[in-house]
Length: 227
Image (cartoon, rainbow, N blue to C red; front, side, top):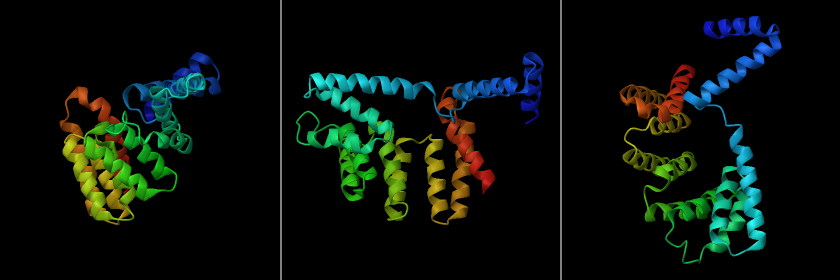
């Protein structure tokens, strides 16, 4: 906190205006976060995504049977949280031989079904993806299923978290998600242990690995502070 006040004072002396100094400080803190932590969302990524979505829609207008464009567009729409639009692209492709054994396709379809009010069909599609490739998307589908089942079937939720942790034995994210699941179930002691394990694991990671795990280590730390 003291460092931020000193930075603000320095910027104020440079710009001679407290508002400009505050704006400059926010920009600097944003750049530092994007470079070293990753808690704040990217400003550039949504703009690039919208440009790519427009281009893919134009390609599909010219060639409605372009499968690769449909799959790429559906992924971008899922990133944008336009799940219904992505589902409309993916569902007609179910019987295509080209996607029948694609774990990414089934996970994308399952995600859309889960987010558009069909949890049973969505879970079935995601598990189909995992049956094809348990490591699809670095095991992220396990986390999604665990979050969904945390209020419906806790035993299944823990099974999915364990499956994720078997894939990622050095994942602070896995321990953080496990802690959040335990918190939702009222298991405060277990949640605390998971957060402590996340912190312990982060300290043991090599420097190159800490960059990608730093966000989850920080979230674990903040969660411990809030109890």
